[in-house]
Image (tube, rainbow, N blue to C red; front, side, top):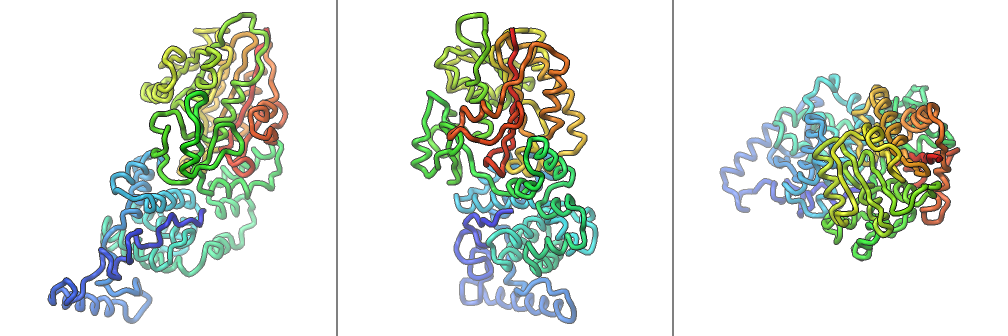
Length: 530
């Protein structure tokens, strides 16, 4: 949970806090308002003070006429995104940009809304445990909209550099404006209880007396317990120390910077670097950008500069560079992306191969995602690529022994990209592993059939879970002869800056957020013998 404030300290980024002479504050008699308004405010203030006498119902230290009664646009954006995620099963990264544009946030407030949105989603498990100590009923009995507003308030209070009074006042104002006056009183009372401790104090409180290390880590780092167990097991399975689990979980909660790649032969990152991007430390032609709206960078709109995690860049480059066996034929190579949508790795592969005359075929079963692949490939000559709408599981049967390099970027749980899609940690269930397993094996089997003698298959997942990685590869190869596994760690080293990633374990490779600053990408490389 980040401590960044995104440049907003509770004022909406626009001058004085509302209620203190700002746009939403009260007008005094003689200062632009009427005497009648002043008298009305005095009556409301006295009524509010009377209600607050004689007990613990001290919902606000501000007089009623001074309380914020409008929703700050940046906080409203965060609220709208959380509501879409909860009510519509939406993805925050898809909803957030549109909401920012709708409310016309400037760069500073857009940064604040982004941190507030993703921070509240990442911290949901910890924050709900805190709220459970401050609400007088089970959380599932709260109006879901009120619960989302409380999460937004808690994140500001415990993990952002927003003064507690501003976080409370603005959150209550948001609730009053978009939900109602009654719920705003509840939110006010609950958030005042939250301000009694800082985040470390609350974690001590909610984990007090617990002896299960997994449960403690789950609450401390806001992950479901099953994911904590799975990630700890994945560390061990890939040759790392189980004691790294806290660092891995903490990396999941750090706000990630945007990773960029310039498509080889089509663009450079010079303009992005001039706009404040930093050169990438791991992959050639990459950069890190944290300067705001990435769509404003030259090359991004044209598709020649792309947003792509460095881990994805590295696995694509490794497949393109690894040595083939004896092909038995001459002429340009034919490459296949078996599960291409939305097309990020596809475009990078096609760009890498264009100088060598490579023709790349991209297969995607969902029409609208196939269209995204076409858009990603748009900057490249049309005669260098083909997009087919179809099931990748059929390619091996329909085109056996045909392709020299095959990428299987298999559908998976995405446990390796939780920092970029924080809502996924609350959606995914252990049962998803069972439902995805047959599909992963069938896709890899199709790729092994489709690859030509001497060719190479790359099996890739954005998950380190053993059930989605080595278990899939081992099962598929156990039933076949004529295939050998290539040292994937060495292949990644060969295409990385510095050449010493420490990602290999046996014949497969695993990248990690807390070690490499990438998504937890898994790579296995398999060569078909003649």
